[in-house]
Image (tube, one colour):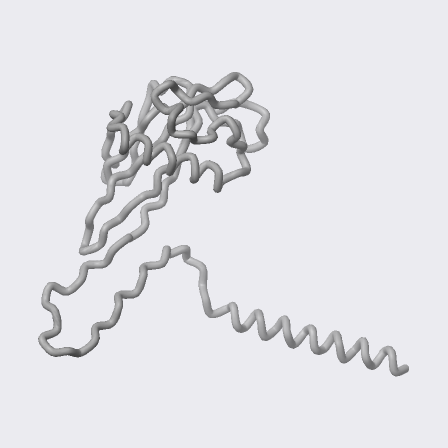
Length: 183
């Protein structure tokens, strides 16, 4: 999968970001980003992605993943980077990766030190499934294709079992409380 990397902001020694001149019109609120606000990071990444498209800004680096799905970039200057993956087709499906932002350096997990060896793990999702080439020749209504949901690995069968168990425990507790009041 091809990835393009754009350096969009400087980073201060205190971890605050300042957009580079060519991105100031994007109105992306990068100076307000905090480690815990994932939705703000996604919103800013999308704004910056749209800005780069609309203003034909060239990427600072472009690389394809290797056979293991890895891209390594070195010698990056400190700053905030927009990473954009291009859509890739495989086995009748189009895989896409949402744009995201990465800070180089980034704060360690306990937020006590700067880490310069940064790892990002974008998740590529199938977007479209291949549709049959031939259309029905009669007026039979066609089924709409199912929307592909992300495969998170979460099992669905335990949900009704756990819900039923919870309800049973609530009823037992209610019955015990009622019996204790009657004594």
